[in-house]
Length: 232
Ligand SMILES: Nc1ncnc2c1ncn2[C@@H]1O[C@H](COP(=O)(O)OP(=O)(O)OP(=O)(O)O)[C@@H](O)[C@H]1O
Image (cartoon, rainbow, N blue to C red; front, side):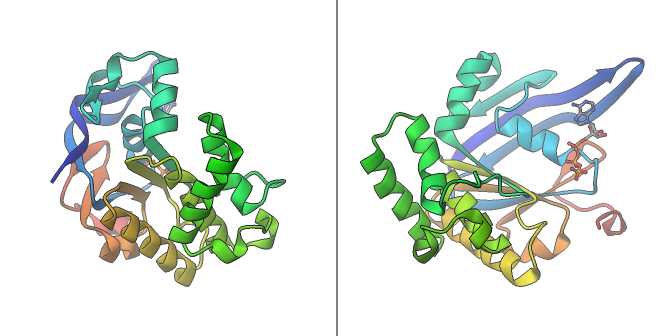
């Protein structure tokens, strides 16, 4: 299996006043292409911190992070922003679509930011929308779409740049069970096309969709669950 990102002796410690919070204890981890990896854990356990580190959103307190064999922890904020735009797709719980724009225009946005022409952006955006079965709704504004449909547009927007890695923070938390299953099926088939799809969730019902599950409990990463009672 091909590695897309790795963490070597990485930790993240927050200091506010007199208190020190170890959001992520020292972690060694490799993430792979062509896999849907679930990062699971109770509220406040460090899942978003781990995802933000992998996604080049925050710097670790110590350790090294590699994305596509590039040591990203030595890069500047601007260089990290460029990596996020080109190499990583983000999907959030609340979709974060731009309301005045149609589904198609929303998906074109990251490509226009990257400097693609409108014609090329449109062609690529239409292909991405087809991958999540949203072609028929491409001219709809977000307010005319259901929650599940909005999330599929958000997934198309995350994959349109041909990012190798898709990072999803609670992508199904606002959805009913049927829409959540459809979104997870979409993400799973994207993993099968070669992408590394990494999904943070506290919803244990999503486990059947995963190729791999990583548990984060009290800032510690492991491949086994300690106490299911803490997950809600
Ligand atoms: N910017 C910050 N400053 C101080 N403490 C922080 C910061 N970000 C996170 N923390 C703390 O680090 C710990 C881990 O937070 P994190 O958001 O990673 O957990 P989580 O598992 O994603 O939680 P949830 O499921 O509730 O989103 C928590 O104790 C949190 O309060």
